[in-house]
Length: 176
Image (tube, rainbow, N blue to C red; front, side, top):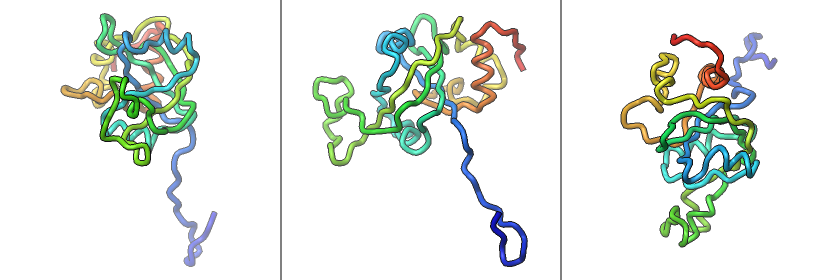
């Protein structure tokens, strides 16, 4: 460890090593956990929110894990797990005039929107419904359960990730 002139060790801020954890939403009629399972790897595109775009660019990295959340469906909730396999890069759909995600203001030399690549890890034995997440105080500050939240991607703490995973496996759990 480097020492300061006083002979005391310097305190160095170190970025945490290891994966970060995410929750990523998709409408199953657009792209579902079954689609990802079949393809094994896929682009995660169509992000059109600046806050989420910035998370992809600045925070999400290869090796991070994400829970796959089905939104706007009959059964809303977490359905599986995936891994980030490629860091953020320009989302090709923004340049495709036939895509519903086309953005005529985005330029090839200065792209506005980003995508990442994901890999299937597992499909859960049972869906973890939004109602169960909402009822669990461990998630009271999670943007997913906040009124008016429209984020399609959000951070999870390791403890929140583990808790949802346990809920998906039918492991008995209590509401904290």
